[in-house]
Length: 82
Image 1 (cartoon, rainbow, N blue to C red):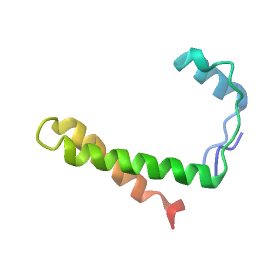
Image 2 (cartoon, rainbow, N blue to C red):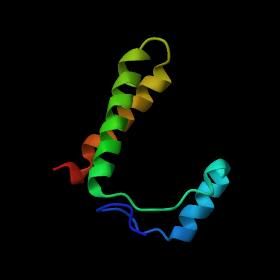
Image 3 (cartoon, one colour):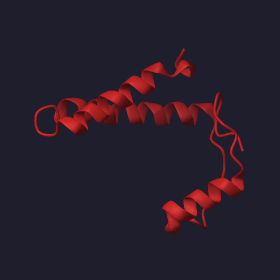
Image 4 (tube, rainbow, N blue to C red):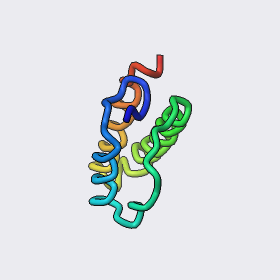
């Protein structure tokens, strides 16, 4: 199962096993791939969340702020945005 362009191919069985281990309450949901537009929306959501982490926690929780900055760096380094 290819989740989106430029991504690893993962079998539906592997996805099901990982979901069952990490989110057992979701195990009955269908396993489907997402199209590129859905993936872009997900990256936009992650970008917005990371921006919030960077500025909100800069003084009160430096580790959380750094995590936001690292997330931004990974999102911006994603070549599929070009």
